[in-house]
Amino acid sequence: MLEYILMAVPVIFLVGSVIYAYKSVSSGRHTRKRAVLSQIGAFAAVGAVCLTVAAVTAFAAGDAADAAEAAKEAATKDFGLAMIGAALATGISGIGGGIAVGNAAPAAIGATSEDPKAFGKALIFVALGEGVALYGLLVSILIISKV
Image (cartoon, rainbow, N blue to C red; front, side, top):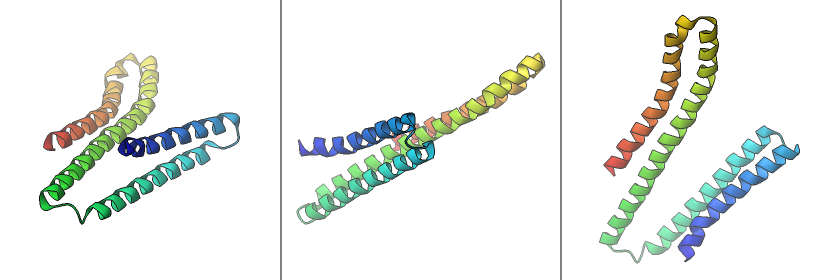
């Protein structure tokens, strides 16, 4: 039961900080820059707490674990890091692809409205932006298949 509580606390903390930042920006108390900085700080704080709890737990259980259990624990940590890597590859490439398509698509529509022959050239630039997200997804699939 304690494990579920420890997993829920960071999620609740991060969701709460998102809600707080949204309400403070909507009401005009803070700027968007300050809200983004508070989100980065909240993420860093949750990461530091999680790493500290993991280190303390590993240190406390280090004396009692035998070799087979230590190997299983190392494999579990490797699996967790692989999943984090796959999630980051997908998430960051999706954000980058969204930014690229968000900038290229309006320009492509504008170019096509002025000259219909420019549709093919404009479509290539939009597809290149989407390709970034697909490459990130491919990398995450490769990471997951190696685990």
